[in-house]
Length: 423
Ligand code: EPU
Image 1 (cartoon, rainbow, N blue to C red):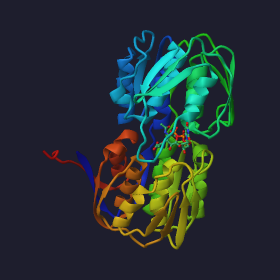
Image 2 (image 1 turned 30 degrees about the vertical axis):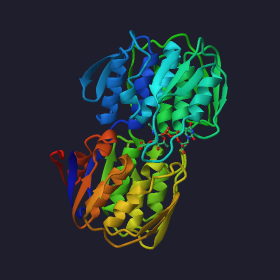
Image 3 (image 1 turned 120 degrees about the vertical axis):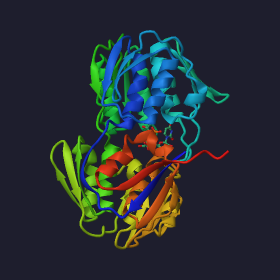
Image 4 (image 1 turned 45 degrees about the vertical axis):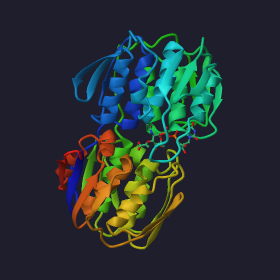
């Protein structure tokens, strides 16, 4: 088991380049199942979730050729199986996209039920509602979901909840359906637009992605024969923006889309930081203790839940008392117990946490409870006095490419240590 050993405090300074978006990549990879041809995907983040997805696709008969560690050629012409390996998919949340993609391409799909996870209950009723609206029969039994249809036919789908996953799954299932599908109350995250752009590049007819009404005119076939580059990761960029603020540093964040970061920029300005926009990069700096703030997580373009723990670190050391309301996930404050071990004063109850700002954090042994909690605790270790040992970092490796290398290049003192497994 690896752990990160961090010696702080460090004011982060320098330049960092953002990788392709994890949450776009884990939707675009299964979307390649819809293509009766060969396509190339560039700017894929080199993270364990992407490697896992590629393994699952190979099990289904997809041929994958790595060109570089961020570029891959995918040949989905000869899919020979519609049953995704249960042991892999039931542990892997984004495996639910296999349902929409396999249903769309083959009319049948079997995927392990994505269990609850560290963020609390993660229902998939809206995904099922979308498949049923298109004519599929869906069964949930014995730890798996089975979906079957003779012919998918376009329909109107109204999402009762704004859901990233259900919106993407509804798109995947309707791209090759007969007729037109309309998704109302769709999610608008940048990775939804990216998945639609990818599919349109391969011959789909999807309009309105990025708004709350998406229209999909079914086409007969997706041709492949094209390259697509994954959008820069909004959440990785936001993580470095907040790391600059927490460490009172100055970071030039390259290869990002500043418009996707508006909600984070607004909060950083509110708490006293500075953000300069250069079109495809931004500079974030901070030269004093942050001001207190109230943060409420919301679907895009609101403040993202996936940057909630990272701003939690900033508010833990802010002047005065701050509040975070988490409105997406029921258990996203587990990191607060770890931050309190480092001297923070956070009281989390249900979906609200109160942060009584302290001047400094102190190094301590802490545990990443999920991906974004891990990123937040890494930032906390960088700004804390003394040594922090960060455990369970496999969560971080799922979603951040070269994270410790990137922080090291900004001046952080981080070492990855492999500890022998206990016998
Ligand atoms: N929901 C339902 N029913 C559904 C689907 C969702 O009630 O059928 C609820 C959820 O319980 C939640 C809300 O709707 O309260 C929003 O969930 P959503 O479906 O949008 O989340 P998701 O698609 O499962 C994606 C990201 C998450 C990110 C959320 C919210 C991927 C692979 N995952 O999850 O990313 O937090 O959107 O933006 O895209 C992460 O990257 O760390 C991460 C957890």
